[in-house]
Length: 136
Image (cartoon, rainbow, N blue to C red; front, side, top):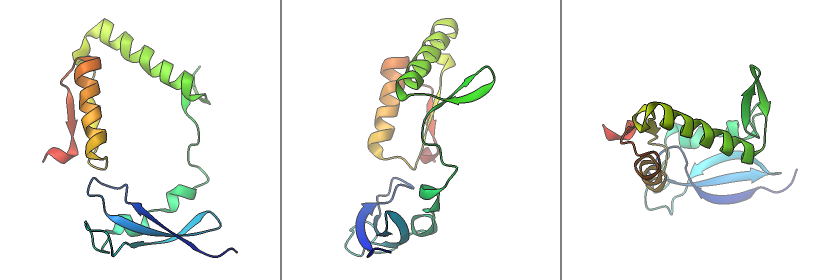
């Protein structure tokens, strides 16, 4: 085994932005601790930030987009997946109106991601049907 490498990063579980230090060995996360130099969390982490990282290396994790064809999920390219999404959204918008489309934003996303999500819904889809679990 190689020597451990320590990588500073920001936690992706919510929009708080806690600093983390990942212990990486042979390109695999071995351990996570809070970054004591991070102004947001000063070394503290929640349970998810500290322990929920094994999914990164899960064998059954998706590595490419899937589209249902003839009743079965089939791997496809990102280009085809994006085209499929655009076509379906256009069909729904044309057939049923923009108000037939809604989007749910996530508190785990950054403020920037949530901003662009609502901007997309309002300017591209022309719908105000957007909600999120972070509005409570």
